Length: 124
Image (cartoon, rainbow, N blue to C red; front, top):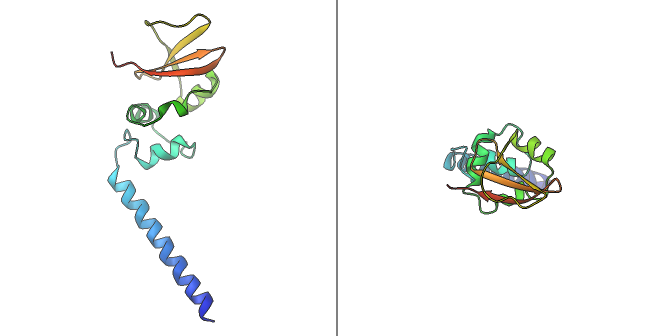
């Protein structure tokens, strides 16, 4: 009879530890434009549909691998993920390709044959 009681106590202890770790994470990275913010991390794995998308594109500037959220997607998939695209002006665009800015950000995505092939951070 001790075994189920021990398992229950261990389960409660593990749940409490995970909850406190989660709340510590939330409090350590409260800014939405921080790539370590829990909302942004969940959004990168498509687990947060309520992400402020302007914060998301700002957080991408400090993300270690922002290309993973764009490269390989179609234009429609990018619009679904980021809300909208704007035509990008200036700069070289290879023949047969098109360039768009993600929202009102400094990110430019190059699409070739309708698929995103490159993501640039245009610092100006």
